[in-house]
Image (cartoon, rainbow, N blue to C red; front, side, top):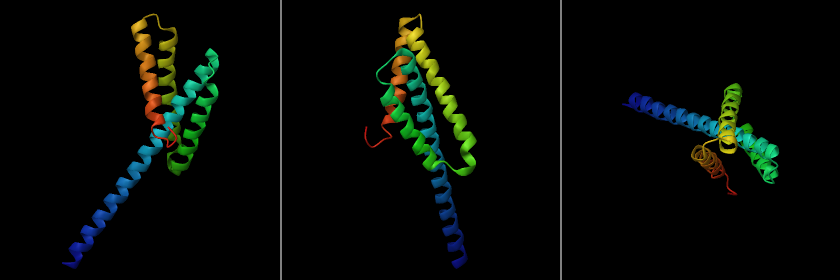
Length: 127
């Protein structure tokens, strides 16, 4: 009976460790995505002369710091890829919102971009 308890305990332990590692990776991925989105917003603010650029740049820096603090050593390339993908996707939304010919599509793109930023900001304690 003792051997069965050991096997069950080991199974529970390793499944909790695996779950913890997955949660850690998910957290890093979320921070990477947010860093990319705030990077796109910062560049867009610079291009459009928005006074929000400094605030956006500070948010981007916060998410970069969080990403660096949570990233696993072997995951750096993958997280950089997530960050770049999120940046380009967000930049596409901003381009549609700013330069789109269809007002409905432009408004929807801006709302979606704002929603992504809101979800990112909710990850921070100061939001």
